[in-house]
Amino acid sequence: MNNLFPISSSRTLLGYPLTQVTARLDAVLMVLKSCKGQQCTMPWTILHPDGNVHNLRDALNPWYDGFYATQAKVSFSSCELGYILAAEGPQEVHVYEAMKYHLGD
Image (cartoon, rainbow, N blue to C red; front, side, top):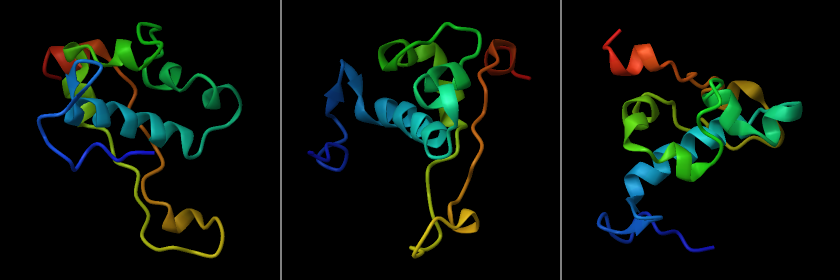
């Protein structure tokens, strides 16, 4: 695995700046860190229940930049000896609502 992010802010992935890509990947990781059932195999449906996003390439549409900028980042407050929910940081993701992110609500 190669960590591409800190190498250069001018690098791209799939033709998009790494900052834009990592915002999407952070959101998917938030879904996957505590997913259950079908959420684990279809994380984009949690973020985009309208069905317009099925994969990273769909999510990279600049239309969604504001939405992904509002998502919490995966974090933890300490390294515990087991799964301690209180140390796991944010647990919830925002769900995409076109009206909210494009009409200023």
